[in-house]
Image 1: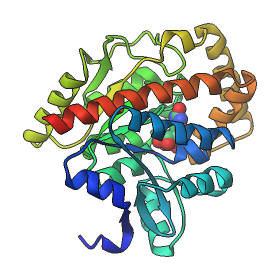
Image 2 (image 1 turned 90 degrees about the vertical axis):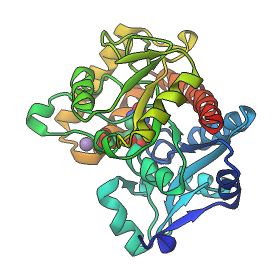
Image 3 (image 1 turned 90 degrees about the horizontal axis):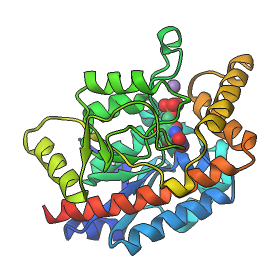
Image 4 (image 1 turned 180 degrees about the vertical axis):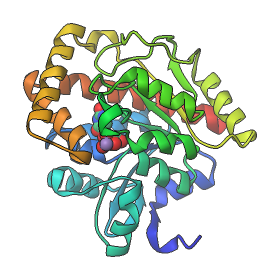
Length: 306
Ligand code: PSU
Ligand code: MN
C-alpha cells in the first residue's frame, strides 16, 4: 500500500495509538449531512468531550483536501458543520476520486470505518447506520455500510437503524454477510428513536468487557469484517413509536413524490423528519449519539485492556 500521501493522523491520535490507549472514531456525515448548523458542530464537540471524560481519545474522521484525516481539529469540525451539504458525502466509491482531486468529503459509516481501520482504531461510535431501504426489492437501495461491516474490522456502536429502513431485511443482509449484531443489555433491536422495533438482535451483551472479548475472538480467528453493537436510546429520550412512525411515513412519501434518489435519500429523510417533528427528533438524535459515545469509550477501554 502507498498510503502516506492520502492519510493524515493527528499527533494526539498517533500518540494514543502508539501507547495502546483507547481511541474512538467518529464520522463526519452526521455533522455535515445529519444535523443543521450550529447544532451539528455543538454536538460533534460535545461527543468528543464525552469520550475524553470517559478516558478515551476521540478521532473525528473526514476527507480534508484529499487526505483521510483521522483526528480532525475543532476548526475542521466547524468548517465541515458550516459548509453542511456543500461537503460531498463520501462513501467507498467516492473515496478515490476525492483523494485524487484533493477535495473534501464527509465520511459516512463506510468511509469512517475505512479510515479507522487504516489508522488502527477498532471502535467507532455514531447515531445510526445505513441499511436496506424499504422497497429495496425494486430500487436495490442497500447502503454500502452493510458491505463495509462485512469486510472491515471495526466495531460500530449505534442506536440501531431507523424505520426509514427495512429493519428486518437489514438484519437478514447482515446475517448473510456474517456480521454479528449485538444488543447492549437488550435482546430487542433498537430502532434509533425508540427502544422497540419488533426485531431481535443476535445476542444480548452484558457489558463492554464482553463486547471487547467478542471482538477479540473475531480478530484472533481472522473472521474478517466488523461487528454491529446496538445501544438503545435512554428511555427518557425515546420518542412515541406511533408518532415517529407517522412522520417517517410522511417523509418517505414526500421523498418518493419528489423523486429523490441515491445518496441524497438518507439526508433528505433525516432533515424532513426533523422538520416534521419540530426538532423533537433532533433532540432525541443528539442524546442517543452522546449515549453511544460513552459506550464507545467504555468498549475502547476494554479493548485496550484485552
Ligand atoms: N442514519 C442516521 N444518521 C446519519 C446517517 C444514517 O440516522 O447521519 C448517515 C451515516 O453517515 C450513514 C449514511 O453511513 O447516512 C448512510 O447513507 P446511505 O443510506 O446513503 O448509505
Ligand atoms: Mn443508498
